[in-house]
Image (cartoon, rainbow, N blue to C red; front, side):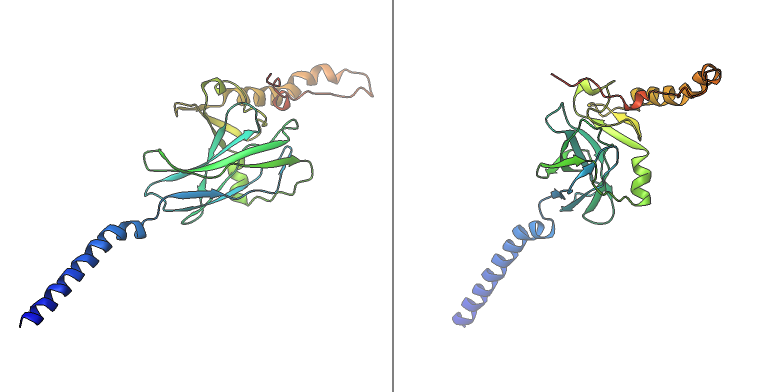
Length: 226
């Protein structure tokens, strides 16, 4: 009788220990620590968009991802939202690099539902070349034509995205997370499309053989920082 009671007590103790172990380990096993990694692209091309891919684990409910990018060693970072293409899979498209920008550094972050960063990937760098082959899906191309670019520093407001072209940028988000129309790129675009109409009357009377040369301010490069 005593032996049976002892065996029962031992079994109960073992069950209790197992339950405590599962209670402690269960949540961690069911919900791994949030992580995100960005794939390195082989290259970027001057004057063209490139798509970046990222993978994540332990994504928080209602969370999101961002791709941070920078003309390497020039100013602060900017960011674009990552688009989800299924559990743990994301892609993002930054603006087009200009010709002075020969290298881009980048990393990805995972955010919780409140917009707080819960994970950051490794920092990577890729060269910008003139012969890089880039391929975008129709959805990625559409995103590239309607870019929302975020800022990380106050002095980025009312300035162009350093090292990148205006083409495709329509909205900016300042370092306080306040969105606005990108007035710099918008003005350049308006001037560019207005110039031919303004110059047409003057050029109409020009002598034959005189070329019509129109400067595109949207493609002008800002001064190189000292």
